[in-house]
Length: 151
Length: 443
Image 1: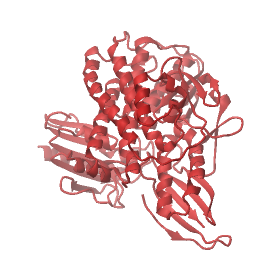
Image 2 (image 1 turned 120 degrees about the vertical axis):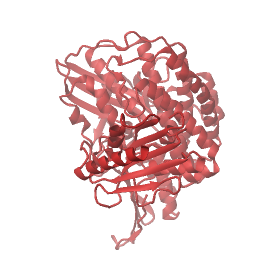
Image 3 (image 1 turned 180 degrees about the horizontal axis):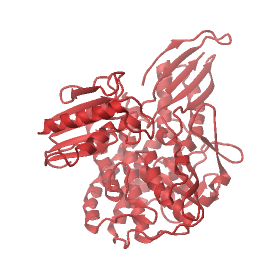
């Protein structure tokens, strides 16, 4: 990311069922966002994540979560003010991921000035499956919400 | 990582305690380690992998030979280049085509990017906290921000190479059977050169820095297995050699190595034929078998950081990875220096019936692919052997030798040491089939 724009990061794995929700949201936003807004996919690897938001003034991270809530339930956190709660675990095939990236960036002074997290509760994370219906509906709602926020 | 100590009933007249750790921290993927201790003695160690296999090998049957590089790149988010490279080499071998010259150089440059990126992630984020006594990278970063800034910049350089050659950082899409869909311009590579020149200084500092870490004293008698090439440190090509005298063509892999199914894991465990012994692939093996292929200045940096010509202490593997990062940055600069855009970006590879073998050096070690094709180039059979599958038996062997030295320590200390021993190998459980818990059953 160069310049001081806005970055939408869809975190997840497109091939792992509802873990794809962040990528699906980022793909749906691409081409519909105003100038100065970039939309990318990311696998959540911490150093790569920190590098991708370098220079961005505003970042929105979208990821699937597994907290035990109903599938499709949407949670929102202002990461510039608080860490992700421990019971909101973004899904990751890696033992280190998005929460570690955010806290590492906070320690190193590399957190963007504005950074929000939007999580969608997933139902199934099997390889090769698409989004489950409630998560698909939530993805559309998140797209609408982000677009409204950018307006 | 969850921790759920619980008391078990009396077992066989001995009191038994079980400690379960839901996830091994700071390894790629998830799985479990089961350790059984009876009357103060280690009785059993099992590395348990419980996620169902991904059936990639089955999924590839019936697909076109040209699809394998992009499909297999999805097996791992950390080392997709390795999967693409082993796949393209195997397909080209099956079709009787050799890709040489600038295209070969570009592939090597692509691989350099992945080594830089993957090793740097492990050195700084996953492994270094063990030596400095921190529970996590975040805690370590509070006291060592400079180290993390170095790691961040170095990894970014690797990612930049991967992005340029691969078309994107995650799941690259630009490599193909025969070469690349698009070759970069000289200008694009010269932009990369500036980044890599800075990265070379950071890589030198990283080697030095790992030499200052307090490394546990634990040496092992390894059978090192890696590629070896006539005149270069191996990435894409070479014969498969071992420190015990094996020297075979890649196509003879199946005659000398065997994947065995074990009850406690969904990943296959690899052993050498005929005696079924464990072996090690990865940075320590590459280094031991190929140290004479490193440029003198890199060998000097390794020596100054306390590394001999052979490293038999897995806890010192952090320095070997750092040396390989320095090599990869240096090699990337050399390749960029003489770059002429290949024309065309990919040579034609007409399909034909046959079997092809490919083995390349993924950051974690030898990655073997074998494909059989029909006349139309459709895949009829496929075998993929990732490095972590090959190292699992060896990791269990390490733990059998390491854990008896610390059984008198508290459970937490035993668990920490076991986790650290596993992290020494940077296991990518995601590749090996995927995802890892730790259970200590102590009597």
